Length: 432
Image 1 (tube, helix red, strand yellow):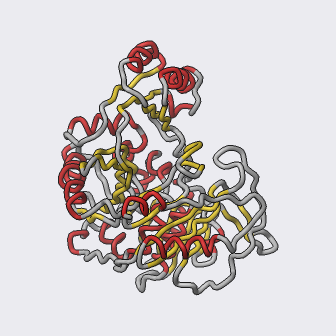
Image 2 (spheres, helix red, strand yellow):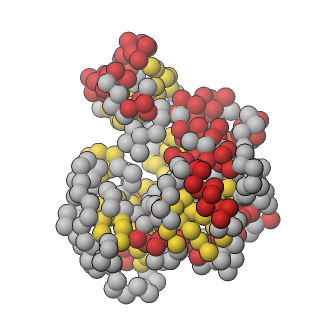
């Protein structure tokens, strides 16, 4: 098969790494990719949102399946574009329709959906610029802390947890009246703060059938001890010890099944991945958010645990045959540490030369996934984003996996490199 993978982050390098190791992969193209995907596949310089150029490339290169990594092309309707294309309408596209992508593209839509189908989540109200004063009144009636969410896509930074009424009111003003997140905060969801411990459950679906993939816990804050600004993710752990079989059964019965059934009842085509951000509150799951694709950096901890053919999983999703696919999960633990540019998630510099990547490439205890990287004209690997690399350690338990991840991370350097040294420590403390 010839596969076209859209995206350029660590998630896409992990996808590429699994796809090229399938016996059914003939050629993998990545649009636009990064330095990591360039080493195992063929990068093409087309934006994931340039649908016309992607279609022309797919026709010319006899592409058999398209796999969409990031959320932006999904929210902008890439799947609908191909399903309406005169030549490519039968091409399997792994990613939900534009209507389905609203589960991530609009926090207000997703909350209404959960409310309609009795999916457990935090209580909420949605406000606009016109209802700003009502929003202030609503804030004053809530218990602290208070959660404010930009309705649209805000690169993982549109969720604010406010510790005081003054902070919440100031943030609502910045979001609604001063467009802190641009059009993404034209609407703001204000919701109850859920207490407990977070994790993410990932689901693959062909629109009717589903498979629950390994769960993971990620770390969103830039600072150790979960302090500082939100980021796209600073690390991840899989499996999650507090997500036992009983808890996952509750997730399946209370959340996964009603979500898949609800999408069918709404006549919303949904082929692809569903990321369910959860709060475990004394053993009961509550949905924090939906994402309509795999998470990053959770993907880099989850995919190395899938033993069965990943390309086979994708093709079964795209051809409505997921019920006959046998998912096999490895028992080992994976922990991912994200290496970022100095200054991230604020201003940071690109173009820094990365040292230490080539040592011991065959080390089975750690895997380097590229995110914000590029190859220079001299063949050097340079930083090209905020989150630069994701180092995944593999081990029999969390302790050994973390040792392998941090050992490998310590050998990599560039000017301004930063990473959290406490990934997984909260989970270790829970199981002591």
